[in-house]
Image 1 (cartoon, rainbow, N blue to C red):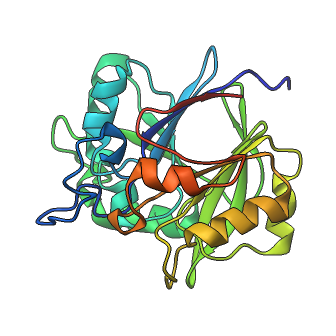
Image 2 (cartoon, one colour; image 1 turned 135 degrees about the horizontal axis):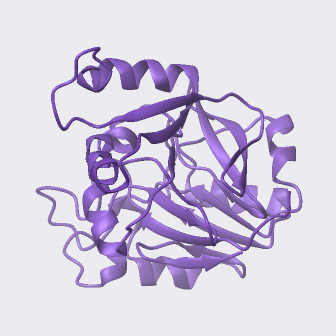
Length: 258
């Protein structure tokens, strides 16, 4: 199938606590720069005919309203941590207006967590108005959502397997600190890669900024964007000035065409 032109919108670029962080008085959290205001990490992927999101964060409702999203065909989940799934209940608005179930693509472990944490969604006799979703199990094999080909990329979030996704020449990976060589091969030929870069200091389950920079170089992808950013990384503008050519911090509302 022909690969369509895609529009990628960063719905959120913050870590699990968001930026600003509750009760924090650091200079990043007190910054008035809009690029230092970060919802939890998620992207919107659009072709001419298909619209999908990767993850439904606790900020999902606000993200949809901010971007004026009227049509959503599917949700892809990277993993089951709360900062990536907590907004699932709000798909009921799309159910109401489109009068059809929401397609949800998730691996086995994420599906189990969704069925556990949103048990009321899957009951035989549902309370009126709860979300209506149809889960499509996925593994490491490529699949299509409408006209958009999706290639899952398994990465490691400490000891937890997490899915990244490739769409055309764009790859999105969040919540990772290790990628096996076989999975790295799936990024070959990409023009853009997005990687998590939590902070400058070492972390148990996330790439540091330098680790993310080094990985972009290793993969020989010309354009690297960094997401899942904590307030510990520093102010957007100050960190951006230090980055090498071809590397940028993503920010909420950033739009890429690829």
